[in-house]
Amino acid sequence: MKSSGVLLASALASGLLFAFAAKISLAQAKSVHGTYHVAVKIVAGKYPVVNQEPIVVLRDEHSAEIVWELPPSPSPYRFHEDGIAIDYDQFLGCRPVAHGLKYACVDRHPRTHKLYPYRITVYGSGKDPEPLTSDAAVLND
Image (cartoon, rainbow, N blue to C red; front, side, top):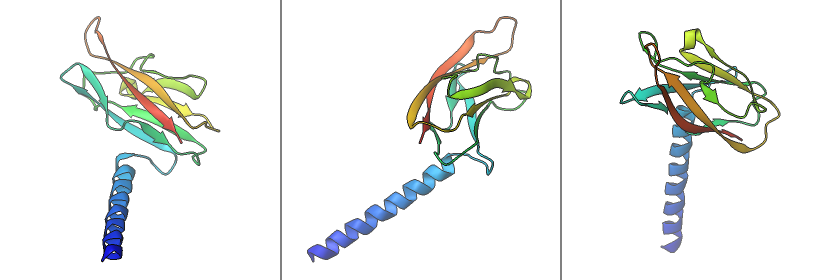
């Protein structure tokens, strides 16, 4: 009786682990070519929020680009040159693309297992828009 309870608990734990792993793989949007797509939405007109936290870059990825993406036009929000403030020794070529609707950085290889905090800065429309900021992180496996 005791061993069947242990087997049942073990089976349930395994099932939860597989379900959790499947959910993580669905949440981490990555293409075949090592590009990680991160959706950024603006909540209440004030807060940039990413759809994955942290962004996990796997060790075996030799070429890993992270692309943060704002909602498409007619969205009034844009990235400027200061769109993502991150460790520029590890993340190279950081720049706004697609007319500021996206921001891209390359996570250089080899990678150290480390959590890299970053700040997102987005601007709305208008003559002198106030920057909208929030903090997030990239985890190199």
